[in-house]
Image (cartoon, rainbow, N blue to C red; front, side, top):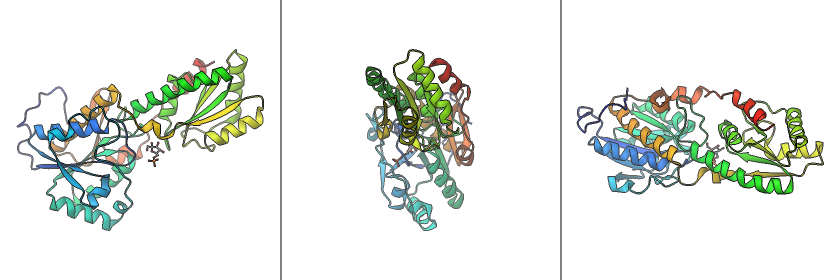
Length: 340
Ligand code: F6P
């Protein structure tokens, strides 16, 4: 198990047969992916390994879109959003033929192992590929959704959260000026971490998430009592995967029930995926990138590296994807109490 309190030496893993490591980013991009690419590249070089950048995720594996990465290739990228390796969601990699092509390309390029950065879709593909062809693969959690089990935070989440808070603060100004009720939709197809913590940090009146059923009556009562208690604006954060039909539908319903409210909807959209990563995301990505290389060189396979309670943790791909990361239910109460 990788220990961060050990002093690393270039000869530490001299006997490990992995000489060349491929790295790719896949699925939705997340701020901090570049910091992770930099950390993987520099760590692998430190341990005397070669690094091959694979462009456009699994699509690039199939299409042989590779480039050797030297230390200088990852200079000056720690602060950049997006991913210098590009990303994609590959339908072909879901087929046996696609994965076979990918394996042949890896073999021809003499790549011994892979480090993949992404979310649940990325790790699902990695798990299948590793099982079929025996390629050692280690994953780094990179998604703004923070929905992977086995790590307290995923790379990109903190930056997205800060983007949301900045946007909601601005909307609050105009909401207050016009005494309006805003429904603001944030990303999170299956997970409400962005909505919940974005709601706490922006002082929102309510949050609606995919993990719990939306009760319109409770929501309406909450808004009503808020207005009664001297509030002149209300903000409700809605995760895109919320089950009652999303921000527009809920807003329509509330408007019908309470025509006296001046209701508006804002969809924050892909602005949440961009921007320079926060210090927290850069640190997280750097620690995980380093740990991912050491994990590979310690002969671990098919695991995601994470950080739990400030310690590096390893979790098998299937658990990272299938187990639900628990939401702290008390935080929903805090939204209600603190905005009352
Ligand atoms: O998985 C991350 C995520 O940001 C989700 O919250 C969102 O539903 C999805 O990506 C949208 O991705 P795209 O627009 O790239 O298909």
